Length: 456
Image (cartoon, rainbow, N blue to C red):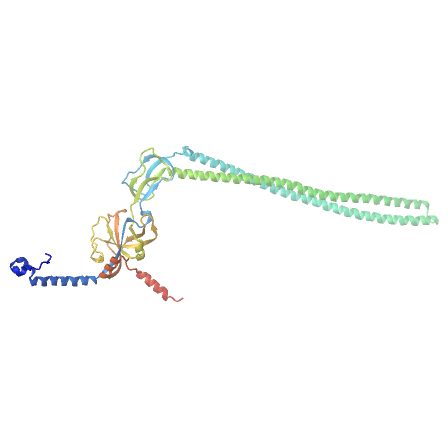
């Protein structure tokens, strides 16, 4: 009723006899309702001042802590054709077990005796290398012999030069002696001639002195001729020395040229042998790659290539394998606005998909079914696909162990526990859309205080 009429119903009719009016106008009912509302208000006011734990939620999945413990795809390093499978999906393999046998599809490696032929080429190159080495040794001996022979020949020629010089000196002395004798003979002839004119000497004495003078003059000519001959011998000895040097230098140069040619052939052969050895090693390694083996013990998740006779290229994924012994971790993603609130080493709560859990936001101690974790690493770059930052979490050793049946790839929800604030403050923050309070972990504060107190 809108109660817009001037006529009052209670003035004409007694409404107290009706039960509904009796119930409505009963004063005890209002007292009970007021008490209830008062108690409710007091409780609500008390709740507003209770502590509330702020959280940062994230969504991720279970992975492994170590990179080598994560699921991996085994690839073929060479192109090939499937010949035989040794495993099936769901099978557990040990490290080194053969997974697949393939055959070559490149004509360069078709020869079944490829390794033996490569080894034969290496052996032939080794013999050729030994021959070059022996030739170099022989040429070294020849060069040493020529140098020794040149030394002896030069010594012999120098001795001849010394002899020729001594002979020149001797002939020079004899010429001087002959000149002295001629001077004496001329004086004796002049004295004898004067004495003969005075009648003191006979003509025969004068003739004898004239003959002696002529002999002295002839001897001078003869001695000078010998002197010039000796000088020619000196010149010939010097020419012989030069000729020996030139001749043996030519022989030694030719031998050294042959030696360097042999060394060049030796080095070229050694390079060819090295290349053949490299090819042989590559062939050996490649032949082992025809059997694809398990890099570690694990579980065959899925066969990515199937059939017999199917060909594939290098780097093609063959099978997917999951390691057996792994240390589980959770990889979660948080919004960029929450990134400054997360630090390595801080505790975090985890709810695994498939495990029932009751979580009271703000009172994590009352939650059930959550598991403890510890932040290991916080990414410094944004994931371009998700638009969030990646956080890696490991199992907290102080909490209860994670379920044994949790598998890598399972979903997980993470809840990072932050500061404790009043409930009214959290409601006010949520209404205004503010982020949780920024804070620094206690360890970083202690380290900062320590650095400040450190004397400089």
